[in-house]
Amino acid sequence: MKRLTELYAGKAKTVYTTDDPERLILQFRDDTSAFDGEKVERLARKGMVNNRFNAFVMQKLQAAGIPTHFERLLSDTEAVVKRLEMLPVECVIRNISAGSLCRRLGVAEGQELRPPVFEFFLKNDALHDPLINDSHIITFGWASEAEIVRMKQLTSRVNSILEALFAEAGLLLVDYKLEFGRFKGELLLGDEFSPDGCRLWDAATGEKLDKDRFRQGLGGVVESYEEVARRLGIEL
Ligand code: TMP
Image 1 (cartoon, rainbow, N blue to C red):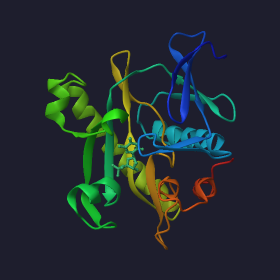
Image 2 (cartoon, protein in one colour):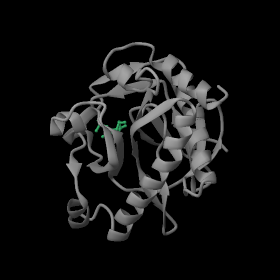
Image 3 (tube, rainbow, N blue to C red):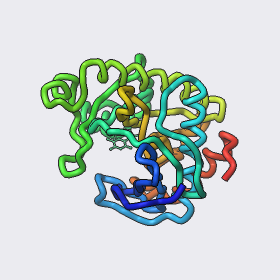
Image 4 (cartoon, rainbow, N blue to C red):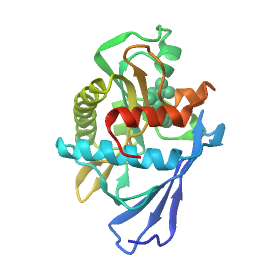
């Protein structure tokens, strides 16, 4: 399968059309962005690491019954996926308090959240991805009632699968973001799952091994992603 034309360039990935109208190629770039694109740097090997990381997680989820857009790895930095009609919302689940939840609600970082907190955000960098609720989604037509129910159900199932997977590797899955899209009347998990879109802490030391290293200027960003991959048994 070959790239045809560039369909969309995001902050860390570029999407290409292919000779198959139902398939796209995702290219994972080394670009790393934070604060809605305010801070951007190229980090060597990150595209390759995230591509392999995402393939591993998507295949685990698929095997556990989560429908995803992922089809196969194409190269070190590319994957073939189904072409979805993406919903403009982001689904976040939080198992431990961190990030914007602490800033918004004034709660301390590191508290266990039971039941986990579920949040919707509007995918809009210019507006800094504002927090939204079901009512906004229905009124503005960003998704249907049934799709809201399905997104919550799938995001929560993903949580059980991935919390266990990361726990076995000595990691706490603090929070993460998922995006969904429509394909032939069904909702599929799209976008990516990588340390760029989740928080992972070492279960023993609490060390941050995700994109917070980049956001907070802690260094060793890709090295930490590689450490997580190594612990999960992902071949890089
Ligand atoms: P937050 O604490 O900044 O709201 O982020 C919660 C989690 O979701 C964190 O793991 C980062 C991820 N996330 C993204 O990757 N992209 C986004 O645009 C948002 C809002 C969150």
